[in-house]
Length: 114
Length: 112
Image (cartoon, rainbow over all chains, first blue to last red; front, side, top):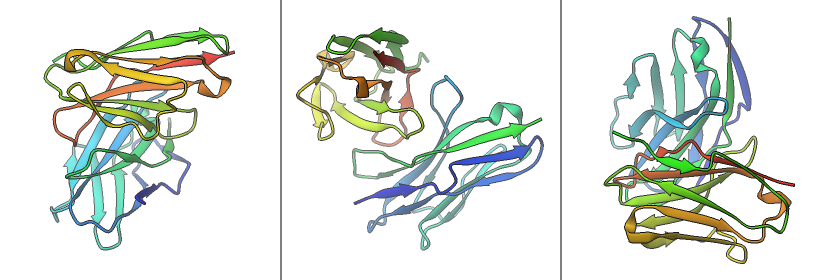
């Protein structure tokens, strides 16, 4: 069975500092996609960043970057220069490139402290 | 580009009543998903449509939940009769490919 594990239920970071959220996954396949989604309080889920497994280069989107370690099945999210608006639940998700279903982790609640 | 629309945003019902949720995906998106998100948990897929056909409904409690997607566009999710444990946020998402999903704002259901 495919699983996505986020081992940090809650994290906090000072405004302007850097924080890393962890995610590991389990699969025997080699072709898949990984995502980080952000869900602010009472607001809708939005895509933060996406990584194709066949790409060795880590994806980057402005202040958000990932550390993708395929052999270790690890996909962590780094948020640089944290802002108050980054306060949200962050979900790691996985899908095969030929698959249908997204597999979500249980989420990490991030609080940015002023 | 308009996003995924859902209505209503909030609904409170008593147990054993019925309720229906509506979703309008992003124009042109062939795949539509319904998720149940219980407080403090990640989304759980209930059903996935490709156009107007069901791709996966393995986690849909079919004794009380039903869903349809008319003409491959809008979709409705119904619960009848509702139970207390159905209290959750129901998320609709759509995608063009089976990759990036775009989520709607969700419907928060409270069953009393």
